[in-house]
Image 1: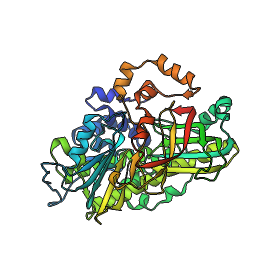
Image 2 (image 1 turned 60 degrees about the vertical axis):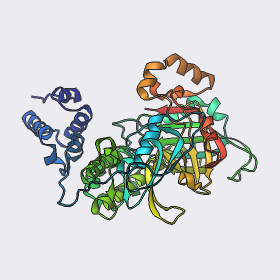
Image 3 (image 1 turned 180 degrees about the vertical axis):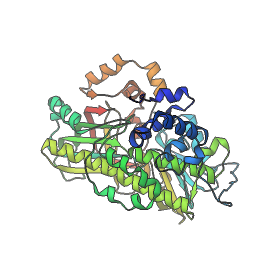
Image 4 (image 1 turned 120 degrees about the horizontal axis):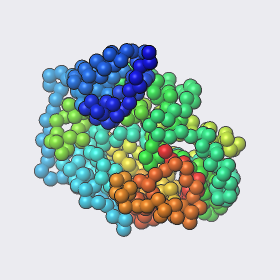
Length: 467
């Protein structure tokens, strides 16, 4: 007799939150396919009622955390910080595109933390969890998991080929086929690319949370997430005397945007919950809870964050390797930068700090980066100017003008299609919440950060694949 197939909606009917239900179904399919229906019913009921008991379980830990399960803490581990009545100084790099007041309020609140040393808001900034997207925060002696974000180490990667840029307009059928065959997107996307050196990182062996996530990381390596993540062909335009010592002209290029997949999300969730247990902030500030770097929990998170960042880079390496091979070419220029990360740095006054860039691009003097617009707007190849007022940072994109729900309610598919046709952009996948109209004007955003970066070239998307 066949067991009844259990679905996410079945657990939701039993009182499970939707996200936790989806995670639980995934665990059952991965680890417990042969268990009886009675066993599954009992374990799920126990898990829902007593998530704390499963937090350290190898299979069920992430599910327990998503249900609000809490790791056990020793006496004296909990701190109750005193919040400042007024914030320290921070700099806002605004533009004609504008920054919503709730994003400014989020950085204002973050600067009231006793550990906050400096802050900045990029011109693409919009509301997020904890820190705003486009927020930069320097702290002393600690790291804030939600200041880094859920998609740890999310990044941009650009490969430019010694091929004419007009191919992105004239050979879209072949380029579309290459993307379809060599990319995978979304929650359950797997590439199974085989061995990769990042999977041999000793953190997978030494850190229990990372160890149990390694099979998922191996399966998802080389795939891309949903939402605003993409892999696309386009045209890079370089002017005479460019920084790459290449002839002036237009070149075919490949741009990808994605992060650390299920590995990063699970690590972020685990350590955020731990931070909120160790650092008890007022309810409205709870997502700014931090981990001290002089404690094991903080050092563990730093190792986990570093691993997730390396894994995200490995995903892009795999994507670009496969697509470059399919083109029969090699890249003559490669630019890669990440956001959703924390860096050790020093302020002009000599203080050692941790700089969190949540949706912000590192822009130290001479540092290269790529700042995208939208599926129908140009991106920019940039070189950092090392401006201390921005904590050596720049925007990571155009930034959202409309939330996802607002975009779905107010935009139309016909207006999105018309714009794509007008700009000769072929879209594979994608949804209305990612329509170009949902984003700020990238040109205005770039004008608002002329003190932060120099523009070296542009990228114009032409064949775009999204979830």
